[in-house]
Image (cartoon, rainbow over all chains, first blue to last red; front, side, top):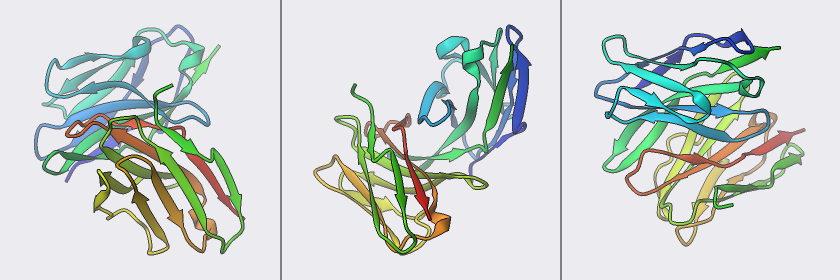
Length: 116
Length: 113
């Protein structure tokens, strides 16, 4: 069975400093992995996805993530945090439930706080 | 916009009442998913539709929960005899057939008093 673990429930960074949000996954086959962001009282917005192409994936708003199979990790990074990055971030693994259909398995989320 | 829409955005109801939550997926998306986001439980899968059929209802927490989809488009999630533990944000997502990427709506925030 697929699973995903977000190692930090809360992360605080100063504006202009790097962001690192950690995610580890467990999968019986080569998974597809996603990062979503949720701003307060909003839905989930797709940041980026890995689907077995390039292991370094670039997303929106300057975020990127690297798929490391040997470490079963898919950490999210950004070189310089902006105040608008303050939100909750979810790492997701996609579980194939039957032919052509997928179900998301969510991590528990990491709340990012950006300090002025 | 052409995104997933949900209504109502907020719903306050009394314990024991029935509620209906609506989801309009992105046009052309054949797959539709319902999730529940609650404190302490994170994001839980409820049900998914492929067209009008629901091959996987495994996440529905009790028989008070049901969902339908008509015309391969709009879906309604119904909660009968609501309980306080049903208070949560209910999220809907849709995707193209055989595609993994899901696009989410803004959610319906349900509060059961």
